[in-house]
Each structure stands twice: as C-alpha cells, then as structure tokens.
Length: 68
Image 1 (cartoon, one colour):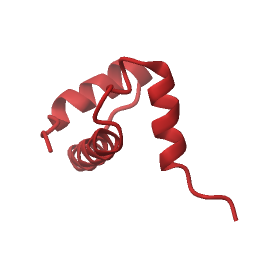
Image 2 (tube, one colour; image 1 turned 180 degrees about the horizontal axis):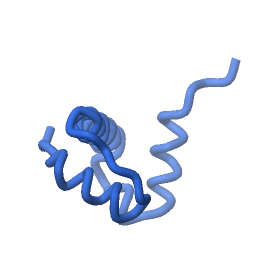
Image 3 (cartoon, rainbow, N blue to C red; image 1 turned 180 degrees about the vertical axis):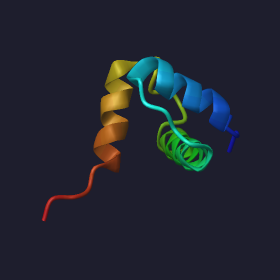
Image 4 (cartoon, rainbow, N blue to C red; image 1 turned 90 degrees about the vertical axis):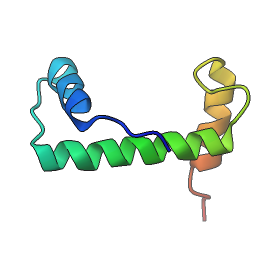
C-alpha cells in the first residue's frame, strides 16, 4: 500500500474544505485513505474505477453492506 503524506492531505483538506487537521488527525486520515484506496484497488483492479464511471458504481455496490 502506498503511503499518503499526512501534511499533503492536511493541506488539501484545508484548501478544499477550510478545515485544519492536527498532526495526529492528518496521520489517521492518511492511513484511512490509503486503506480505502487499497480496498478499491483489490475489488476493481481493471478497469480502474476512476477511468470508467460504471466500474466505480459496481465497485461501490460490492462494498455496500448486504440488506437484511
């Protein structure tokens, strides 16, 4: 799994959402994003979900909890 720079993530959050993350929050968020990225890549190795909208929908449906 690739490592996401927490400082870069904090800068993006600040720029896009106007919210400041402290160092611990940025580190936790970077780990979370890296985990989500790995899970999506494992479910949809080809085509990549960002290249085909229909694949993204299929991948999200596979991640959704089953209805009881």
